[in-house]
Each structure stands twice: as C-alpha cells, then as structure tokens.
Length: 132
Image 1: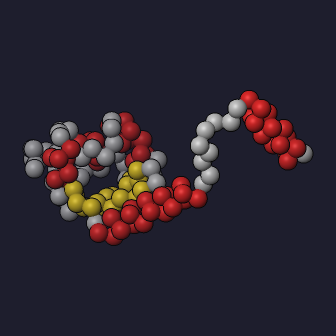
Image 2 (image 1 turned 90 degrees about the horizontal axis):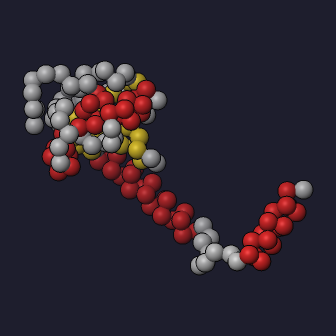
Image 3 (image 1 turned 90 degrees about the vertical axis):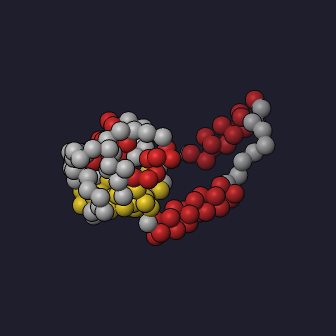
C-alpha cells in the first residue's frame, strides 16, 4: 500500500491511518506524550518505517500497533486498516478495559427520570447540609 517511495511523517501517517481526525490533533497527541514510536517519545516529524511499533492512546484505550504500510493519503477506513496491525496483547487489554467500563456502568445508579422541582430543592438542601 506504499503510495509513494517518499518518507512520511508520523503525524501525517496517524492521520492517514485514521487514528486522529486531523493532523493537528495527531501532532498535539504526539507532543503531549500520548504516542510512542518503538517505545520512545518522539516528535511529529519522525519518519515512519514499516515494522515499527507504535503505542498510542485514544480515550481510555491504549493501542499497540505494528506499521504494515506507508501512506500519506487519507482514504476509506477499510483501506486505512491495511496500514497497520494491532497486537494480540493490545486487543486483550482493550477488551478487558471495555468490560470493566461496562461493569462499572451497571453499578452506577441511573434514575429513570429527572427529579422534579421539589426533589431538586431537597437534593440541594441535602448537599448544603452535608457540606457543613
């Protein structure tokens, strides 16, 4: 899937592989330390090579991927998925975290409807009593 023999920057590759919506978001994530290239913190101008291991965060998930192709053009998601391969360990960790979030959501109380005016006032007065 090498569109050209030129070198592609890390921020542009992450954008083309559809991990981030814009190149500026990809750049901010790299600068913020959310993306590691072969286990090291790098700059957005790092040149991507096939076989490299990239670790990146997306929300609560931390993905470990192996670069399988180089492209600087953003295409369909089905074609973008050919540019990388997620490791098995990363998939297991992601599924485990997803299950924990699902279980946590079941334990959190969610009322069926919103409180009316009288119930809201009671909640506010209760909160003020407990703050003192």
